Amino acid sequence: MKRTHIILAILLILLATALRIVNQEMHWYNLAPLASLGLFSGAIIKDKRIAFSITLIAQFISDIYIALFTQYQGFYGVDQFFVYGGMVMVTLLGTGMGQPKALKVLGYSIAGSAIFFLVSNFGVWVKIEATGDIFGYGTGLKGLGTTFLMALPFYSKMGTTLFFNSFIGDIVGCSVLFGAYALLKQPLSTRLQKA
Image 1 (tube, rainbow, N blue to C red):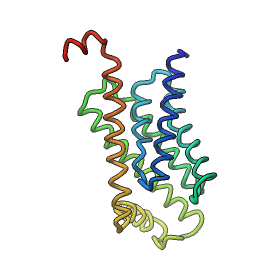
Image 2 (image 1 turned 120 degrees about the vertical axis):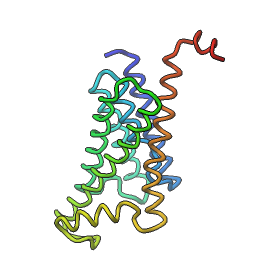
Image 3 (image 1 turned 180 degrees about the horizontal axis):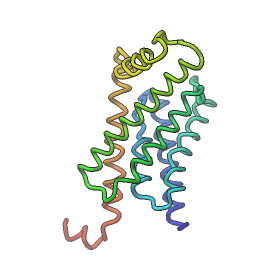
């Protein structure tokens, strides 16, 4: 394992953790680009152990912070395993990206947000099935459909913001991560010639 990979992984974990904590403290829910970090890690980092660990560690550290220093639960039940599973699936999606190009990154970003949305809300339905219908969505397939329907816009301004923020956070996050990577990867002499 190269030292640069370890340094990059540590920096990405710190950045993602800090962004999620700031999002939580500023009440900008779902705007933290953790899924975009998973996508980027899967696409760029060759050591897949590191690639899959980065987002999970960042999520875990920020969950600890939320549990200890905010009024919210950092760890909240069986549906949280699906949140972590969604992060793993987005990272797995990133491993198939190949050469990152602007439109490809946009498409993968939207797909990653959609995968995370589906997996994490499927976890809400699993929780309903396991612990009882605490939300009034119903059970079985009807409950699954209602869970996704209610998760889509949450039928409120905040819910619409949550749904919108997920996609925007991931698109902006992917743009910054992949853009910075492209700039840093390009030799300085080439950048100076283009300027």
